[in-house]
Image: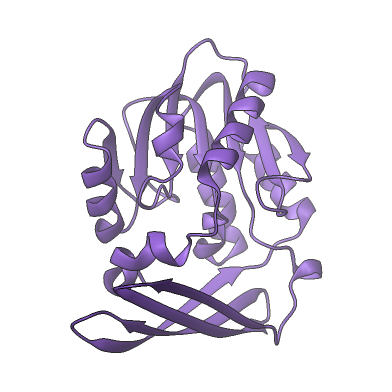
Length: 233
């Protein structure tokens, strides 16, 4: 996806209120974090839209697998350290008081085995008393196949239309996004295929417990998908 669409990512997801989401995260950190520090790692940070607000209150670093997304994030936040890495296997020297993994990025690992591996790996980078905040993908019971999705951008020099249908293939939700993108120089059609793992509430909680975290669930979350909060003893 990001090789072709990274430059349009912020426009495509213009509907997200990153400021409001960051404020909710800050409230949860104040309530649940037990460690004394303020070092925060945003895993799957994308173009750094949450970081824009979180860095006002914490010493923030970012991590993402996509070099295209990191290129944009570094340009927007030259004062922030960014790392390239896979959430299932990254190894950093630092340990953090807060680690976030938001906008259902965990779903991109696809399998339950890799989801559990990612949670364990992220938890291993927490300080004692540190807090992990993970925004899950939709659970199997709440995912509806056959839904036609539509999103658009309408600006003077940029028009984007995105249409997709949601499908289910076993424990995987599958999407084929069709983008029609118009700029003053050209109109292009891009097809982006994505797959995201479907896991139950208990499977998420079990992954947190297996990683040695004391886990709770915030049912409201940032955009209706909830948040899993795990404190490292």
